[in-house]
Length: 113
Length: 111
Image 1: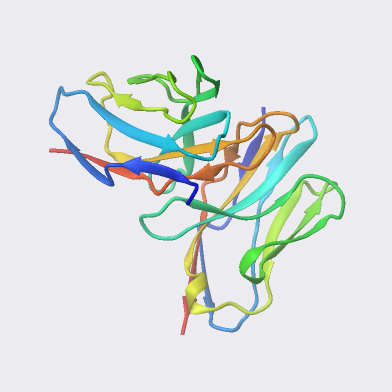
Image 2: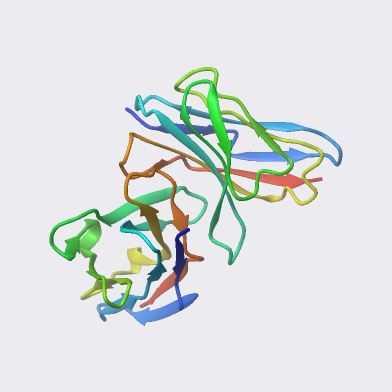
């Protein structure tokens, strides 16, 4: 089975500062990796995904993530955050060829003016 | 516009009552999913369906039931056997081997 660990439950950061949200996964087979964002009282929106190819993945809203197979990590980064980035961020993993997702417990990003 | 519609947005249930949450998609996706979200616990899979007239239990299926009579619809019933039903429920759909798309959720509360 697959599992995901998001070590930071809350990350406060000042506006225009860089941010990194950490995600580590565990799996005995090859996986797909995803980052989703959730705004209050809404569903999840896909930020970016790693399926294959380049390990640096660029997504929407200026976010990017790097897949590191040796460290089983998929950390999310943004060089300069905005107030509108305040939300909950979820890392998720699925086995290649399977549709089911396994989610981390989420990281609440709060951007401080 | 194509998307996933969950209704109602807010739902209240009395103790001992069953209640059904609606999920409809017009994306022509084969697979559909139901998740439960509790604070600090992320999303947990309740049930999923890869194809019409077929569905499988997820990690926390006890106290829930589903049906998949049509490709576009995947209703979830929260039964009286579910002892702690207060949560935010999210429905998702996906084509095969593609990322899931989510609805805006239904918040269920017990009166």
